Length: 418
Image (cartoon, rainbow, N blue to C red; front, side, top):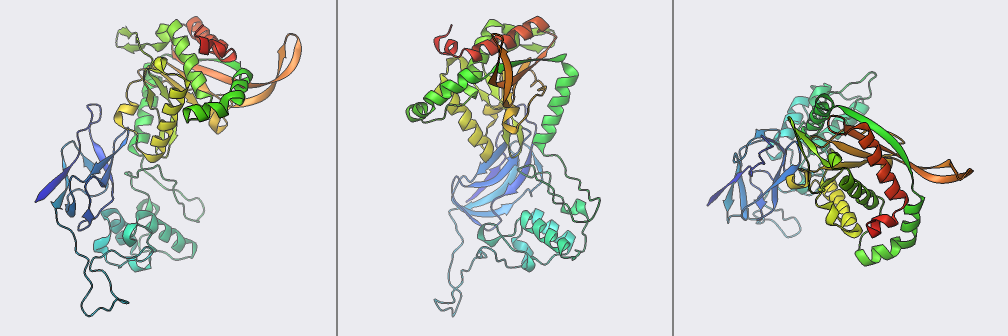
């Protein structure tokens, strides 16, 4: 029985998807729920699993194709599998499987076993597949293997039939943003198309700057009280809650309590209307191999420190593994971004539309401060609040940021709700 593999239903906000990578090739045995192909949207990477055991009989859409909801991608012959029988007159010591699966680092040299993207690169550069070291599953040659082979030939002074940089550029359907491999010649350039996520980020950043009256206000916070609490309770917290006690939970709590006092900072603009949200869904900016993503911690006001830390840790793992779903990334009433993990001392974060404000955290540095007429050394962090001046006045924005500062410098208030 033939089973169709189709593009799953895409959310209303996602028009189409790009077919990134086939994990199986025509003729391969597949298992039920095994991931067959990755589809990249402008928000997430979706996996399309096999609906039944069988053999991938036919691939309809090649890598790099733009596909729509319900579009046919491939067909599976259910219930059948490729037999692995020894070849005639074979002895046990020299027996070989009848399938084309080969040990790692070896390949058959046949272009039929190559994916469309790899086959295209091999043809464009006039390469011999037998000379390319394979690292893919079952001894298959991956696109990275071909690019590494081209790079090695270039460094050895060997030129391929078509050694132009545009031909060796990674496909725009790449799952992670690739670092281009430039040849050793002087004044080298390489044109690499944006991934869908990077293009969407660019679109939203321009949208934020063009459609909002964005301003940024700054302040600084003494992190010593929070650092003292973490130092005292981090081991016990980890044992009891099975998660680490970081800084972000304090900032989420401080933000939520401050948003309750300044509702317009938690609001959004819809044409001529202001929408005031009676809930607190906090976006946490996370760096992933594909770029910056902002998963949303929903109902953050109802979560304790442990639930916040566990949720953020889960987002980090999902972002790293490309497992964030559409539901993880949609919505949000306020965002927190932490450039301090990369060493940023100060920045002006850009709004995440349709939200009206975003809080930027930065690096903690020991600085000399004056307290009660005396100079002391304190671990200080600069804070930045970018806001939409259309609905948030300057006084309101400054007061909101000062309130966050006060909560962080007296974190017992967050625990006691005072």
